[in-house]
Amino acid sequence: MSDKRLTLKKRMHIIKHRFRGKKMAPAFNAFHTFLFTPDETTHSGGHVRAVDDLKRTMNTVIMALIPVLIFSFFNTGYQYYAAIDAANGVPRTVDLFGNFLTWENFWLGFTQVMPLVVVSYAVGLIVEFIFAVIKGHEVEEGYLVTGMLVPLIVPVDTPLWMLAVAVVFGVVIGKEVFGGTGMNILNPALTIRAFLFFAYPTWMSGDKVWVHQAVDRAGTPDAISGETILGSLAQNASYDYSVSDMFFGFIPGSVGETSAFLILIGGLFLIFSKIASWRIMLSAVIGALVMGLIFNGVVAQGWIGETSSFYGLMSFEFWKHLIVGGLAFGIVYMATDPVTGSQTNRGKWIYGFFIGFISVMIRVFNPAYPEGVFLAILLMNVFAPTIDHYVIQGNVKRRLKRLKTATILPKTTDGIAQELQAETA
Image (cartoon, rainbow, N blue to C red; front, top):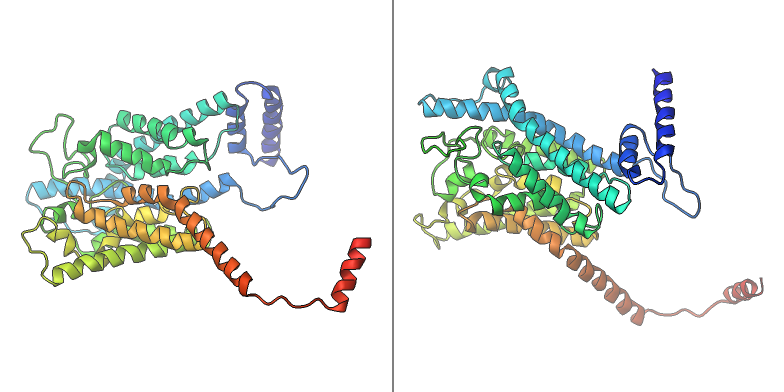
């Protein structure tokens, strides 16, 4: 097997040399580095040498997303059949091995979710290849993670053409116009999600979009309802899901955002592998809890009545905000984006706190779309450079202040002799 791999590598190198200097060289090099690790080495100067590179970093994040993707196959099928039973007056409770982890659920979910993944990657990588050829640079690996994130943050019945249009917009406007991977100021996946929400709002919100075939293309009025917990609370209605259902993800929602348990596992994996910042994750959780506590306090004080349109979400237990909707997914996989987030340690605390704080605020005050994590992250993406600027300036001012009060010790005879010796050397 090793001889065959070696032969293939040699053949690829021969073809690579033939492409050198030609217009399509970046496109071929992308396939080459996908199959083999780059063989370029440093030629001069000092460089940081490590075993990781951008491709390995992106692959690590994808590994953290795979369990969420697989769970989405089962949950998509389960929610579909559960909605049919509910429409027929048959209550259904989760039985993990009885009616959830079944081939029927998996296959239905696979056939609905995988086309979203394929379209996301195909369209996004085509755009990346086109820009690489036009600009004459190598194809960047930045879209490897974005291509996986996008299908997980949209409703399962999102039309494929709609997703394709949004991907083109997100890659071009959200990344390429800024210079490509590492230069963008907005998270590309969230840019795609924002485009979908504002361009096609009826497909991204409401009570008919979260369960497969809950509404057909003609919009039949008697379609199966698939309301999320946040949607029910936004209408001051009750919900029939237990805490365990919310935590493990047996609830309607975007494709991959429902299982807080698997998202938590993925977050710990990213922290352990030092890919994502634990400071951003922890501070975002604190920010969400603080905002939730404030709203709970408002309700407890009687400052808002049960007739208010905000009562349902304001009275929702503050800690439950972390296990419903896309808050956990956004905190772990998108707020921690090293390109668009804060770079300083203190800035990460501020940046993360406001993401959690504003996410819950938008949930309560936006009854048309009670899910604000993607808007909160995009907003803080814009402010991240400003946060880092003031953090750095604050450090500079503190050091200058210490310098003014510092005591300058007289030089010793040995110190003067060493300086003279250095000057004459």
